[in-house]
Image (tube, rainbow, N blue to C red):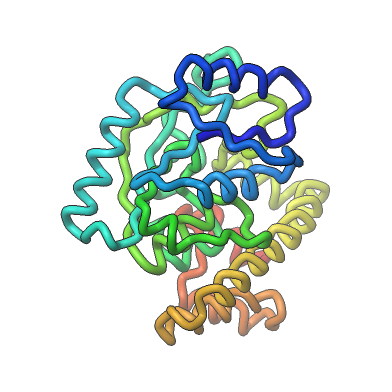
Length: 283
């Protein structure tokens, strides 16, 4: 299923030509074609899907030949373990490449110093998403539980990961399943994180000022997403989980000591030590 999010080039004509050639394989969701952005666009596609399993495709990445096979195998193994009625999500690593497909990094997870296992715990997903949308497969149970995706959701894949962590299970594939292309117009890009980057941000007054300003903006967006999650699922969450999400959504309202107390108590941290040092210093 494809939806054109208001493109101004020949995209729609290309899609229609594919639909004419493969009418049993291509479904075009045609509406008023306003540009809603990635999250709302994928949300509309999900709302119209009746498939048992859903994968997400970005237009600028290249799937490796084994992607679908190994992902569905992992999903079926999860369903064998937990049942088909359980909300389930599978995500995988990718190779990071430039616009000409030259390799930037053999692993996005290593490049960004993220952890596909501990990073999918709910308390960590509240502040950092490690499930890259173009690698994800979800089952019908997760789709039904996740809809509607609210406007406060930062990205559709992040929302799906939160729902899977809260109500189901998340599996992963350590092998790269696609070439994750980076170019100037990438909406969501791969960003390297290492000691050099961290020291530059902490020691350069200009960089530190920019980091603090941007960090505050990101924090508010994260807290709005957490608050939206709480409002949508409040009656379905266990008391302690509900309290944890509520506290996270209000961290910026707390004083310096109280904020750090709850950060440590509930583990509101990244998977990477360097980021966490910076978080404790300036959050």
